[in-house]
Length: 151
Image (cartoon, rainbow, N blue to C red; front, side, top):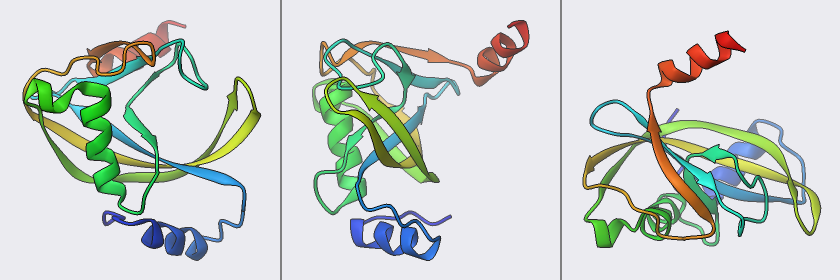
């Protein structure tokens, strides 16, 4: 699937696949792999509006029309990218999916998540939004599949 770069492109894609909900927000997400092949994940902190304590990729609500710039802005905000000298390459679109999250103050909310596969080329991420991000961790995907089998 080609990168969807703008909000109008995303809305055209959603129309093409028959997504008809009207009241939803859009978020961009990056699944970032380190040079060692590990997945970088953030644990959501107590200042998040939803999903507190969950592990996730880097990302956030779309505020403008440029999805890729929004993703780069999230690298700066959440991972202190400028301060840490991070170089992160957005390699490709992984998926566009619809989800629901229960927000602390508003109840259930529909979201469209635009998820990208990314590669950390340089630097060491740090927490850029204390309180919203509890901590960052890396893990091999194999670790997750092994945990599932043990359950």
